[in-house]
Structures are given as structure tokens and as C-alpha cells.
Length: 177
Image (cartoon, rainbow, N blue to C red; front, side):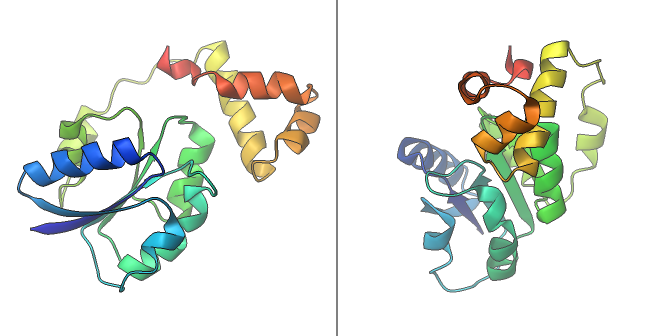
């Protein structure tokens, strides 16, 4: 049985995902609500870590390096409800092995947690041009990342009011519609 760690601040999501992964009979799952809590356990190599990007008091991006050093996972998969190219690139640059937008199905997670994944290359969707809304979303995400998540600095850099930026960020990514 392979060991998995899930770090997410949504208690219901943790409970459901833990139960579903353990029901497969393939995994022993430990759950934590933040990176600091996970790092308090003994350092043992694990098969995989599922790490939420937007934790209550921190960013999952900031925990990638420490998690990789502490647990040496074969897979470190970022999970997010607000996927963007900028955050995907940043997560991979910091050491994530995969990046999945929520909601995610159990079968997709199981496929991504396999030791080798040659079938994933063939299963990639055909590239489509981005819509203007998607281009705007990506630009906002890049500027937000460059400003370390600071809404006021990002709004200034984009030349818009802070409340306007917050409204745009509260909506789901245009790729979800």
C-alpha cells in the first residue's frame, strides 16, 4: 500500500478524498490542513502529496520546496480551484510534478498518481486558441504572482481599482465556463 498526503484547508474535501482514495485499496492517506502541520510529522518518503494552492493562511506554492525536501514524494500534485498558466509554471518551477484544476475526478487522480504515465501524453486535449477572457485572466494571474499575491499592488500595476480586481478574482477562471 502506498502512502499519500493531502494538504487542504477544506475539511469536507479532505474527508471525502481520503475515504475515496483509501477505498481503492492502493493508498494509506494522511491529511493535514496546512503545510506547517504536515511538516511536524516524521520525515518519511511518500508516494504522493496532493497540495491545495490556496490554503487558509498561506499559499501552497510557498510550501512546495519544504514538502519535497521533507517527504521526497514521487508525485507532488498542486490542486487549485483557480488554475492559470502563470501559477502552473510557478508550481512546476518550484518542484510540483503535476497541476490539476478542481473539481477533479477520482479516476483522473489515480491516473496522475501512477508511476509512469506515457498515456497522458496521448490523452492531452487538442490546443485551442484562448478567448479574450482567458487572456485577461492569465495576464491578471501573472501580475498577481509577480506582486506576491498583493491585491493593491496588482491593481496599481494593472491600472484598475482594487475592488474591480477583487471582483474579477472572485469569479471563476474563464476556462471553467
